[in-house]
Amino acid sequence: MERTELKTLGEFGLIDRIKTKFTNKNAETIKGIGDDAAVIDVGDKYMLVTTDILFEGIHFDLAYTPLRHLGYKAVAVNISDIAAMNGLAKQITVTIGLSNRISVEAIDELYEGIKYACDDYNVDLIGGDTSSSASGFVISITATGFVDKDKIVYRNGAKPNDILCVTGDLGAAYFGLQVLEREKQVYLANPNMQPELNEKEYLVGKILKPEARTDIVHELKEAGVVPTSMIDISDGLASEILHICTQSRVGAMVFEDKLPIEDITMLTATEFNISPITAALNGGEDYQLLFTINQADFEKIKNISDILPIGYITADTKVELALNSGGTAAIKAQGWNHL
Ligand code: TPS
Image (cartoon, rainbow, N blue to C red; front, side, top):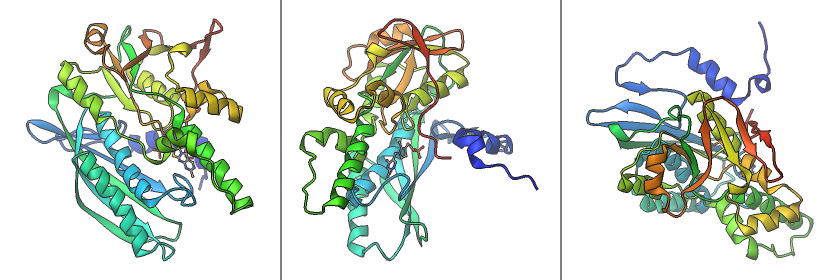
């Protein structure tokens, strides 16, 4: 029997391999594996289904992650996937894997965060499962949502000359994580030291309590426009642009000087001696929406704050960054890859 290391396939290679083994049998299944959410025809609307799993040690470290925030984030990242299809989430199920390290009070806190997110995003908790876990704490959420049939947006609709937009700043969550990791090391070396997080609050907030951009879904609807393609930025801008371009069979030109990076992100990047551009491209966990839109429709939304043009789609399949120093560099998928 052949044995191939998972690393040789990577996360996306593995998804493609699974996808080729299944074909859809039901006419209601409009889209299965391969977008931010699956799409099911339920009559006058499409239903959207997505799921995300978070593992202790891979997605969060309980040393610096309050369970209230973890609950909120686990909901928000699913709602972000529904938003990436231009839909709004309505229901979630929550599955948790627990060890006896976790107290009843800690679980109460987790569900406080889940409830907070359910109220913020107008979502109902409708079920789930509970088990013990031998590999640390695990939380997996499935979300369902809905979108009008004529408003659904996939990853594969980008067209040459479309404008490429993001919905907020990038790289902050990455530096939030760096700050938390640094403070953890300081604490482990000397538990009496107080963590210095005050001026880093913005960054730490971005990693611990990300928001799903459902406000943008509402704004696009109000403006009467539908993007040609959309995705949410979980693995990093570079990786997500490549998903859109590969699936749409197009390329893109992104301008380095248009990448939205906050001052505090810039300052912290200098402190850590890490390029802020690399963090913006590959840091991940920004949970902003990345979308393409035709030029006429872009005119109708260009004054909405937080919708920022960063480049355009090209007919050839090169995906490039126009550098401040002149010239261009290829954008490569160096985003977060779990395998
Ligand atoms: C303790 N991290 C985890 S998942 C992910 C990133 C950038 C991308 C999206 O994942 N280690 C700890 N906490 C973290 N937040 C990270 C690493 C960074 P997915 O593809 O599963 O949505």
